[in-house]
Length: 130
Image 1 (cartoon, rainbow, N blue to C red):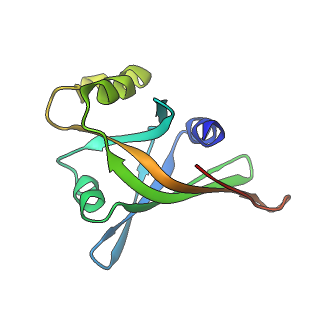
Image 2 (tube, rainbow, N blue to C red):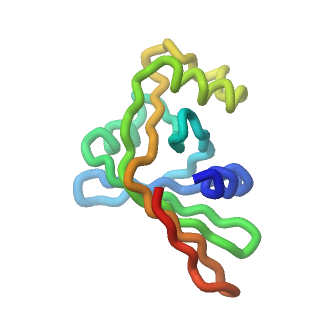
């Protein structure tokens, strides 16, 4: 899990795929944070991505850096505790102008039943679960 977090942070931007009914939706994300031994992402409750995750928690992330890519799939589970939201905002101070832990909009999800695969054209894929 730490390797996944490190890769996502170093990549800077990763792409999160969700389902909107039978239509896939992909958008750039930038948050990845370990809190209480779980890997979290963050969004706002007013966004379509939040509604899609609540309707179908299955997701996939794809990130690329330095000739290597990472794919992570699993389920996203909302953690509605203020401590989890505050931990994310502390890790990403740049978000604090748009989000507050108690604003009713900030939302964090942890990854459950994850499968992560690191791939490249120069080595065999490495897959693990967390």
